[in-house]
Amino acid sequence: SAVISQKPSRDICQRGTSLTIQCQVDSQVTMMFWYRQQPGQSLTLIATANQGSEATYESGFVIDKFPISRPNLTFSTLTVSNMSPEDSSIYLCSAHNRKAGGDTQYFGPGTRLTVL
Amino acid sequence: AQTVTQSQPEMSVQEAETVTLSCTYDTSENNYYLFWYKQPPSRQMILVIRQEAYKQQNATENRFSVNFQKAAKSFSLKISDSQLGDTAMYFCAFRDANTDKLIFGTGTRLQVFP
Image (cartoon, each protein chain N blue to C red):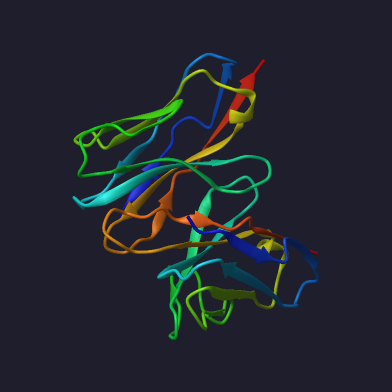
């Protein structure tokens, strides 16, 4: 299994500012993902963080708003740019190793973001 | 596009009783995986159980078991001997073996009463 940590665990930010969330995995993983969970809602995939190349974004999410980095096989960051109150959500990082047999996708504890 | 549907927004069960949470999905793929995740108030996503689509045998993990009906595209979760600690949101999720992306249902909030 993989243990995933996220920083910060929560933050309160002002409209128009940006916040960078860090995700650290305790072992090398092939796949890393970022999800958003709006209040009382399910999880929605924002993007797949690709090591050494640009992230792959899902429909409705763009790089200018959610730039993502993944410099190595254990670390990724998600930035929420030019924030508005609609960005208030929990942001979750997840990871798994791709191999035959369907490895489990593990999740970090999430970052609770409140935008005023 | 794949979709996952959980038709029960809320469920409740008495401690020690059995409860079944429903999940249906839609896909044209033949190779995929299905998961149930639990999210307690701490918001940590915890894997409960997983099922590979190519396996006919239903997965079991202690008090948790699934009823996987591939033709009907149904994947229900049965919790036996419910415990207070089972109180949480439960999400059904589908993963395409080609893309590795998880698609979640809307969740079922389960309350276990003493």
